[in-house]
Image 1 (cartoon, helix red, strand yellow):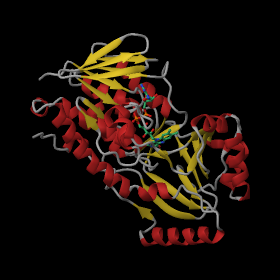
Image 2 (cartoon, rainbow, N blue to C red):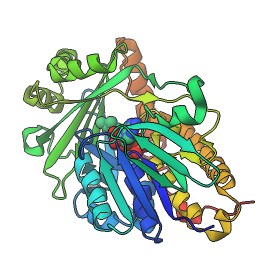
Image 3 (cartoon, rainbow, N blue to C red):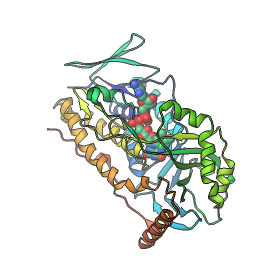
Image 4 (cartoon, rainbow, N blue to C red):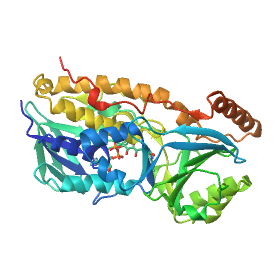
Length: 410
Ligand SMILES: Cc1cc2nc3c(=O)[nH]c(=O)nc-3n(C[C@H](O)[C@H](O)[C@H](O)COP(=O)(O)OP(=O)(O)OC[C@H]3O[C@@H](n4cnc5c(N)ncnc54)[C@H](O)[C@@H]3O)c2cc1C
């Protein structure tokens, strides 16, 4: 049962990644993106070794990305007073982590799609009005009266997925706000003061919340900073207004005014109210199934995780693994329903593991307002790093190799 065309809804990270992986195996796809042109949230993104492995061996854009971002082997962790807790390894035997502008990552993948017009079509500004999932294919109908037909439909339309509603019906659960938003911006590293022996990237755990300084250009001269802030949820328009009005930046400056450490002070003094980006991380409760008929979800549409530096990695692993299944004649001969069942089973196991193992990485982000709680946290972190020789290395998430996953379908 050769595949003629795969329909992919969502032109963020997982959608173009799947299209590229399929194109490498001569399978055609069409990517449908609701936004009128290439757009992605501002700021930079960390690509862990497991993300890079999928981007290298299956998706095929690693070399281009590596020459456009900052490679780093470790992340320094400090207390509010600047004390170094220790370092957390960010590399494995094959790759160092890579920090890159989100727009560069996105544009690199979309450029690679455009270079293969015989295999990948990307349409922007399309609004889906209907999904018809039939015996021998899927038809998408759009608001402008046009339509598209393919063998299967992959929903890569992110955390607020419409395709998830098609798969699950009206009872589809909604994502929940995690209670902490991330305010971020970029600055030349030279404008951030730090003791001469400090290395970046670095994270400071403070009594207000977490402050991170990452580097995202090849030379390591451009910094991206993040601070976390605990807030009650708002609707999407109110969050947009909170960022665009400059209130998010002003609130961050107010909150961190009590922290005197020089890196945080110089950073906050340089923040421009109208030049910050807001990320309001949501996560999805476990959903009962990721697929129905010829339709299957990948990426955040299926399983958005709390922030732990693995969201994009899970999207790339999904795309890489599904492409391996779809390009295996042996797998596809059993029918798409079974291919999707295999996909979900394998990927759920992995996602659950990353959710559990990655919990610590996200937990540090929440604020701890009471002084005694902060002191307790500082003591616990000092003891933990000292116990581990001041260097934490845990490759259980990052050493994962999607090319070694079983693609046998029964
Ligand atoms: C500011 C920020 C910082 C982050 N930092 C990190 C990080 O450092 N490391 C990390 O691993 N992860 C990070 N993440 C998470 C990571 O970006 C996501 O996990 C990842 O983008 C998920 O990919 P996706 O393709 O599933 O969804 P998305 O990238 O969100 O793409 C979904 C796409 O679908 C489109 N779409 C939505 N509805 C429709 C529709 N009805 N029809 C057509 N198209 C539609 C959207 O416009 C979007 O382009 C960050 C996220 C944000 C916002």
